[in-house]
Length: 145
Image 1 (cartoon, rainbow, N blue to C red):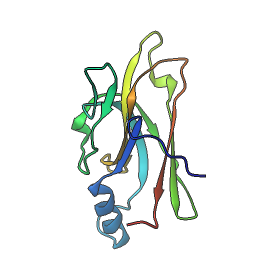
Image 2 (image 1 turned 45 degrees about the horizontal axis):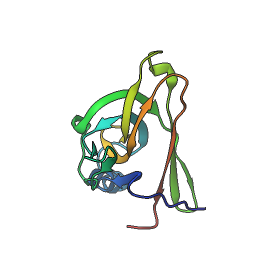
Image 3 (image 1 turned 60 degrees about the vertical axis):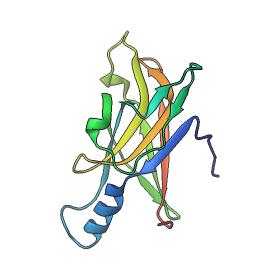
């Protein structure tokens, strides 16, 4: 089942680098391409508007880790594949958080095995902390160019 979420609440983008690395790996250029980790943090892609709500900008196709304004949790990934879709589940690791501290959150960067972003996901500004779980799931349809 596919669920559609308003782009006022959530946006995701595969980056140009994803396609480049996937292509190079398929012809044995460089290291094997692996989707390997995700980083929770913030970026300037999500901003507060005059009405007090948050706006998610049009997501770029080029993004680097220096575009993250904060990073507070990095998790390993174990993507799955079925019927042409790579599914990436990203669960906040509360062991990486300090008890009693609130972490602003609006951006997830998905990295390859060279620690470069291959995709980004932005959501409305939230606060994450010990005791609050957070799970994000991203699907990559490999049958669409």
